[in-house]
Amino acid sequence: MSENFSDELIKNIVHGNEHLVNHRKESFGVNYERIEWVFSKANSFNDVKDKRTRIIKKATAVLAGISWQQPFNNGNKTIALIVSKYFLRKNGFDLRISTEREEDELIDLLTKTMYKYEDDPTIFSEVEEYLDRKVASN
Image (tube, rainbow, N blue to C red; front, side):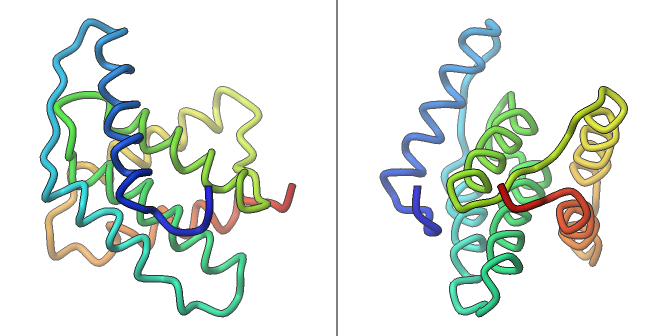
């Protein structure tokens, strides 16, 4: 995976969500306008010079964006976390979550993000602050 989210990669992410929710016996559906918005936002950080900052901003766009936009019928937080962790790892970083308490903290943050209003300036900033604290070079 490169730093950019291509159309092919987005199709694979949609397929990954379909597989995830089918395995859970939940309904699959996707709002393509919302999913395009999320990955367009992630790709908008290409000009950020510092690699760590750029990668965290892109991971934030995916993690917070999918959690907030809810482009899938089910499995939004799970697929957002899977894609974000994979993206970070492929670009030389790791999201270090080593305890159940840390995992619960992240899920609580994503759930809180999911319920934010459109004009809330913390939709992305709180997730970015979290990632900035938890992401380390691998």
